Image (cartoon, rainbow, N blue to C red; front, side, top):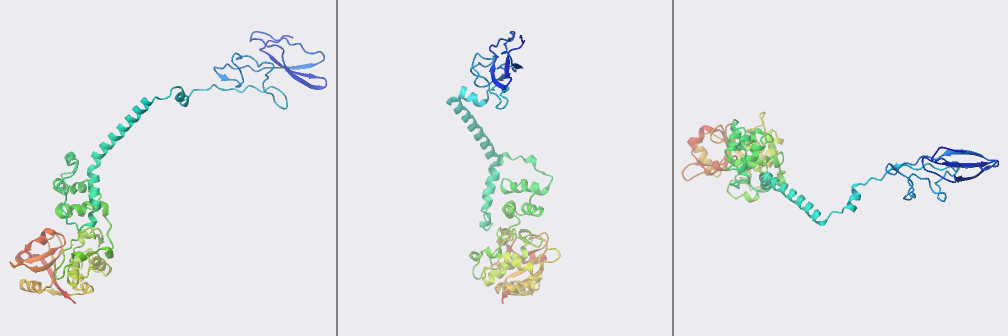
Length: 409
């Protein structure tokens, strides 16, 4: 018989059943025909062998040897067969191997010179970015580091005279139509922390920003609100013992970082804490008890209802609440001789003040003595500058609303 095919695998069967499998005796090229004689008395079933795929498209079994492409396996090396039917298994067709990047590393290994060059370029890029970041953030980092030590001081140190990067300020970025911002911008050179306040004016309470613009002494306190706002040491953690001198009334400022960020009424003590701060000066000075710091007195005032409907300190804190601190109050008339007599007898006086030299609203100051020139010496909880001055009675008498003199109980 003549069969027009690449080649045929013959499954030979006898009358007794399966006998054996073997290959056709010869295989020819694609154009040749196969004429395989069959044994006498047998029936044969002929199955065409699957076409082999060219190597440039798919691979054959690994055991295929060079020179056998598009050819059938040799008779002494037949393909695998099904264990049950004993029929040849179809050739496994898989995509030809594709060279990937990992192989290229072995074929073309990177030279040491190229490695050094690549690492050098990366280092230059990193140092360039760090340099730019340092110039941009230098001012912020410097101010932040300086602010970390603020709570440990008594807020008396002068601000630095220069700010890193001040030459690079974009003044056009500030709203100079806002009088408060304009006042801060004008202070950039003299008080560097005003830049922190102006840059973060939307994150700082408006009244604090206005306080910094009006009172240069509060600039550091306001700037550090970003770090310590809404916080404050517990009264028992505050130590004022080093500031107490026998026979003298100490000077406390309401915006001292030790208590200035603590809330009193509806605002921080730095804004509305003049009442308890003034009473703390008198109580601590007369008794020598270091427990009577402004935060302690403020807590007492809040807990016992000495804050009025406007969240201001009520006068009753002086006339009634003060007795809790071992001192006795006495209300005075507005008379120069009465006032100076009490002061000369060692009786400090808390004065409630109207708008004027000390405030634009209401304020408490402490009168502590009379100078050799007959002027009044005071302790202003909102100003070091006012405290250092001597005040004529005629200048301040119209600003006084009420007076309380204090003695030890």
